[in-house]
Amino acid sequence: MYKTSNFSSFNLQKISEILFLLFGFSLPFSVALTFFCMGLIVIFSFIRAWSLGWRKVFKITHLVWFGLAWLTIHTLGILWTNDPYAAFEPWKKAFYLASIPIFMGAFGPKLFKKSLASYILGIVVYHFILHAMHLGLIEFESLKFGGTPFIPRIHYSPLLLFTIFILAHWQKKWSTKYRIASSLLIISLLVSLIIIEGRSGQILFAIIIPFWVLLETRKWIYFWGTVLGIFITLCILFTSLHSFQKRYVQIQEQWDRFQKGDIYSSMGQRFHHIRVCWSVFLKSPVIGHGTGSYRIEHDKVWPIYERGRINYNPHNQYLMSGVQFGIVGLILFISLFFMQIRDFIKFNQHPFRPMLLILPVMFSLICFIDTHLYGTQTLTMFIYMSSILYHPDWKSYDQ
Image 1 (cartoon, rainbow, N blue to C red):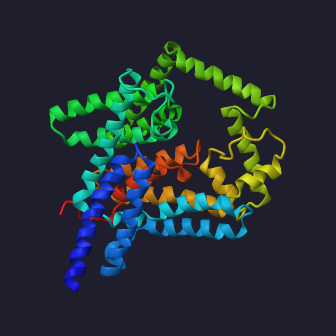
Image 2 (image 1 turned 135 degrees about the vertical axis):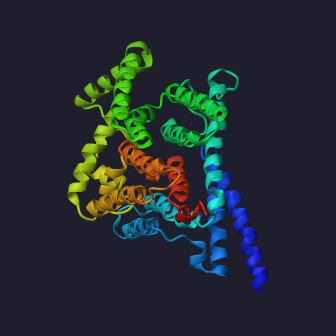
Image 3 (image 1 turned 45 degrees about the horizontal axis):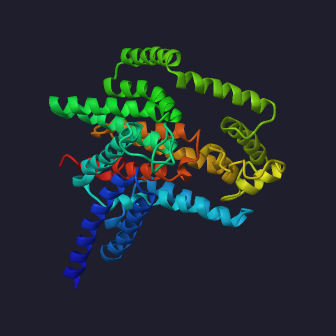
């Protein structure tokens, strides 16, 4: 009976490993397939844990305690929310984030680099589909030039950007011919970042690249050289590309319209939500208004507006955390990034050490422009990468 149980657990482990690789590959393509893989991994992990013991399956790291605290505050927040129906969606995303230790237990050191490669492969295949679309080789009737199939570009940009950083770091250990091929691919990915007009990704790249150069070279002269190079590049792009000039004019126009009371433009909604969130936050600054409470609280503060034209997403994870859970939730949310940065400081022999800092810095920045921990592709990418990069078995990887 014991041998049969071990054999079944071994088979489930192998299936989970395949599902985890498929999970990484499917991130830019299919939300349904991604969650299908995640769901099966969780189910198989609980079956294995029942057979082998919880500590032999689930990995205990500091992310466990964050995940439990994040899920707990979302669960307790249902008790004092004024919109229990709306509470389910953020609670569900909190449960996904709390499952990182489960996904860590689905694979071991042998799968670390394969998992990263699977993610990169998915992005590269998606990237070539994107280029084929812009070259007119394939068509998506619902998209205009600058769009991205399958997922919104605001979620694709961080996935693309992180792929560039992983490849640039990883290729240093490759042979010359593979480094040349990888460099050409990176250039192609950077072209994609411009083609899709993912403004958040472009800004994020400009902010992070100097720090990435500093991490890789450990020389400040290269850091300042990169800053100067980015400044010159931006000046050239702004003066030569119509799309950059057009976007600047749009931002200026939308700001002027917001000043006159128009809250329905893209920028207008963001400024509007900052104002409303601050008012809602001041009403309950310590524990907030509960999980999923923003829609009703928004209407209390700003009851008169054109229905259907306002998105109830404040496009800012910090604002959303403050509104739902007050200062307590805001501190808890920010602690996630400090925990990951602590691992960067602690694991100084990690083969992908710069990524331990790039991931939390990148997400701490993009959470200013959207609620990415309540998103889909960016949230699942964060879960996938956190499961790999902060896996406790990296310590024994060389052995």
